Image (cartoon, rainbow, N blue to C red; front, side, top):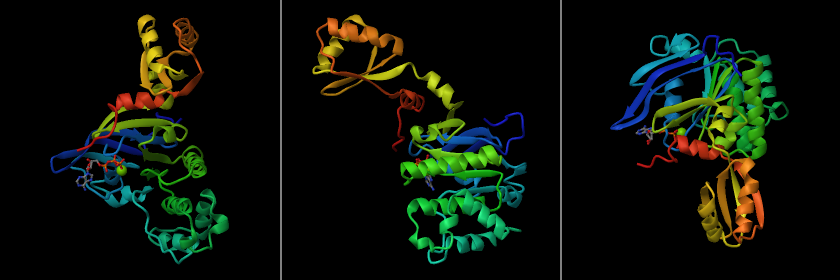
Length: 312
Ligand SMILES: Nc1ncnc2c1ncn2[C@@H]1O[C@H](COP(=O)(O)OP(=O)(O)OP(=O)(O)O)[C@@H](O)[C@H]1O
Ligand SMILES: [Mg+2]
């Protein structure tokens, strides 16, 4: 976990952006620290990309202050931008050139990037072996890694990636996680990633900020979020879930979260599961199986964001 007594690498204060009548980002404030991976989590339309575009200098905030590595984005734009790296949309690359040549071309936009640094970032993203192949031969995951290498070239203090796991398979997500953790924990970069999937952020991030409808609702560690989830969800398989539900409702304090033709999900503490099954059997239900469904972390997230998608 990052040391929060040190200077933040990125300070966002009251950032606000309105499109017509729509407030996409509504007075968002938080600090990002060197050495941490911060997950910016929210459903579709929450305002993640808009905030990231403001921080990366692509769009201007209507209100608020953004300070990157001590430089105010408004008054010292170039210095602020020189400390940041990231990917918002797919980075432009020359498909017919090799990965290494693409990085060389990109390096010319910055001062003093050595061939050694290019080798270093290729190594970091695990592409040293394929560095001299044309990019058009790369898979989506490899292209994403080259994009990441590109954004790391100038040793940014802040690295921001918008939905970096999009389109990656589980192995790709695992690799990305290792690369980002390495950047943050070993090299002291302040890393921020956005996602609408809590499960993907769970293992990648030290802290997460939950955003919905343009507002930052909460900042917490994954553990804190877990603690907010009341108990866990257990799935009980039975031939007659409606009957089981009735038996439970007569004699047991519980919360049933989901019902199918042959299962019912119940939110309950582990210590109560024995008693719950006993009540069902005594009531005449048949129990065909009991299984712990993922922790109720996803549920806690949905609860905080009010259940999801902001559809206009
Ligand atoms: N250029 C724009 N013009 C008008 N409205 C916009 C513009 N960009 C974003 N919005 C609106 O702002 C809100 C936030 O959009 P944003 O793209 O930031 O969400 P997001 O959290 O990145 O969503 P997703 O998970 O779908 O990528 C949405 O309601 C969107 O329609
Ligand atoms: Mg987005």
